Image (cartoon, rainbow, N blue to C red):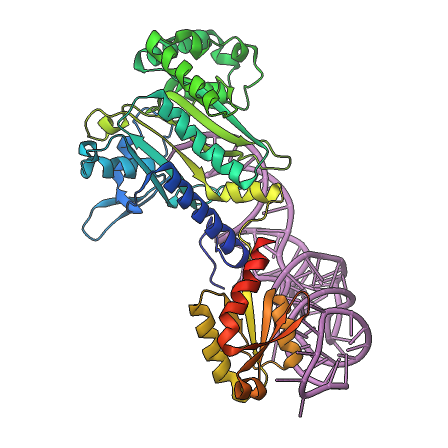
Length: 426
RNA sequence: GCGUGAUUGGUGAAGUGGUUAACACGGCGGAUUGUGGUUCCGUUAUGCAAGAGUUCGAUCCUCUUAUCGCGCCCCA
């Protein structure tokens, strides 16, 4: 049998409603934050991802989906959202927009060629924001507030915000030197992976799971001691504004993201929920004041984050939070076959009046139709037979109270408006 | 890329080297042909991921492949 490609999944039914609900919620949240929607291609020149991410990061085996198109161009399915948005920002000269900063959001599928496991797919959906053109720490706080407020709206409880700073380039370089010096005598104690990290990206030694409990980890120098005045002030301001917004957070010096384009603020929101898998980072982001420049634009400050829809859904499931209810206002039953056309027409009419309406397509018998109405959880059932059509008085039954009404066709819409609005108020 | 466990109907699943693959839910039909969600009856897998091998015979044993789960690596 033909199967879906490894690491992909189909969305349908219940899950479809959940996804749409979450996407709509994000969309309306972004309207409130007054961010602009950006959509970039799913594939870009390979160069964009392989260069923009930085040569010195420890992503050696760039786990991307690459292909060569018919014009012999190297293409890559986007593994993340930021690079594409930055490219678009530069190419469309958004740095020249009259209104600054440029605040954007995006949502869509991303692709990584990895071994699937809990909370990790080869095709996955991310929502993210990128803000360009301001170095104001307020913006760092605002960006962090977005996922936190979103999770709050959904009622997610078990979330933890970890923030840290990597400082500016000067501070970071000094810290890097200090780390190398500190770990040098301990190289023998570190795991094989950390020896590689020592060479390529020493910051990442700090969030190693294997060596976590080593003495030399605990005594390692802290970034906070290596910040210059500018960096220190920036971080203090970010914390201040988080407090203004009443966003709870923890400073966690071990949060260093994998990429070296980050400067100053980095953060992760993790799910601290019982029974959640090992992939528990729900969203992550930070400030990247040199990325635009690296990709070929003018020197521009930037800050952003991305969250994964799949892990969000798992978190909601873990906390038994249901979103995206299936709503059906009306189910129409043609009493005998001759009334099918009339029922079909009535269905359309009611749909055009703003109700969600379904009907019998299976020529079910009477009992089967009522069962179907139950299954679909219809609020009301309309019985359409010869009698009703002749007299223009419809039989409509409240599916929950079992109360039955006779309503004139002309008054049907008003009747439904009144009753269905009541339902929604409950 | 490495390790490890799994794969039986629409669903949850039990099970055995040997003629008919439990049980439950759901679906459909009937008792009840314009009033249901209860009950009862009937029905619902030429089929046990795919291919190859061992065997008189395999869903069950072996191998390969695919996919899924979990962990590692990595996480843009």
